[in-house]
Image (cartoon, rainbow, N blue to C red; front, side, top):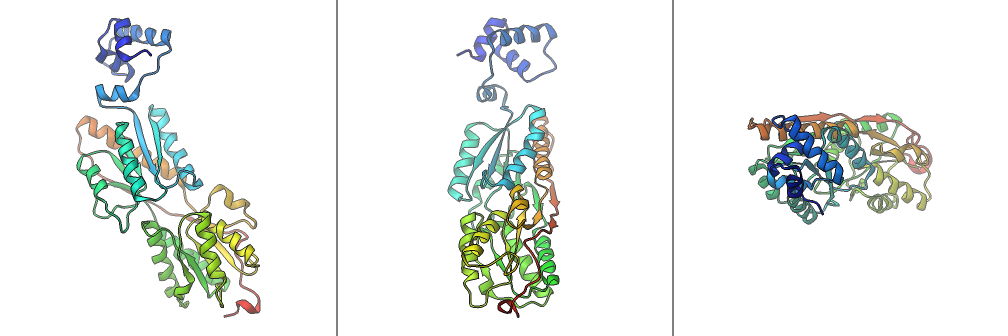
Length: 344
């Protein structure tokens, strides 16, 4: 297999010059550039990014460390990130943690083994050891996080989670719902905590009765939604409406409603978060909060590239944050409560 050393020898140039040509350095003469490019074209050679990083400190790789790469919410974010990276000749190294702390630590090790130029991470942020994130900060590695990491000054993207939940509760209250259930997200998720806080705030604002039994143990998967909703629907006095941590959890709640003999929205209204592509084709289509996933991905990609460029030029990196606001999309999964069983 041809190496960068071989290209240097065949073109009669130094290895550092070959690297400079590959990275479009302006100081290389046009004649030298053409000689190197001719050898590369003749041998149909593809550069080894890791080897190039050892020489010049750059691999043009960005690690995307996400909780669940199969979640359609994350796939839309990845599309937004790639729309920025590709034109700049950067590639994404996609790693999934499945919301497990040990896998998050392992993903960071893998990212470092590939000598990535920067990272975009959706970390666990509540009730876990954040020393691995501190090490990234202390090393001066460009890193953007989805959500603010407590006490660590990273640039981060945030969603107005609490306000979105308040908006949902207000909408359901206007429909006439007084008994509103809530399926919480993962315990280690800051966004889950913010949504739960927003739910409690909204219940008090609307002078609804807060019932602890209506706050179901949650998660982020179909199975979590099914199991959590099943318990709520089996209560002697079940909720007439259910807010779910995300659309996948809502899909699990749909299945639980079917098995419990409940119709949507006749017996129970269901609301999700994220507005994944499938939400509009659920039966019935799901009322949910639309997140601008593509735009969020673009912002994180632009921010990490900006921090990489500043690091290379020796400029100080000033961290930034950006908050996006979700939009409540009303569909057929919500309606006023009806039936004696669901009277207050």
